Image: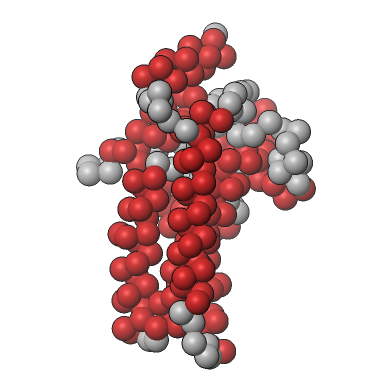
Length: 231
């Protein structure tokens, strides 16, 4: 019955949410071309980076992983005033389009429900990466600001690549890579309706899931889920 509901929702979504002029390849190219351009521009601005300034990269990676986790757990799965779009897409659309038993997209037009909308890509850069980068430039040095922006946007692109890989056919070249295959299994278990509100909120690497004890191995999804984490 659930698989029938997923199939029916997919058809309804395609008719109601995907415009006739939507081009999945254009969406994909915009996301990565604009993101890579920001990374290259930021890297080009670096000038005689001091040893301590390189620490911006690992610190930003940890920060981005935590932001991914908190955003997914507390915004994308719980309605927050003013952030309705961020809740509607994952919980109201993405999790209805893909179940843990039907994770694969059926065609390139289905990228509409996998990739972030271009408006959110622009929002991410203008409202998140750029202001923090400017603040860090003034507090520390311009190199720190540009390193933050380059790393944050690169992390976002990494997020999009991995999330796309999870919804490609399992035998795809990218899906067969060892690490990607293991991460895909974790994300598949997150799409289990019994688990999605409490477990495996990291889309990329489960660092914060391990930290906050919301990590659940993929094999465990076949058993009855335990009580929700108290964290």
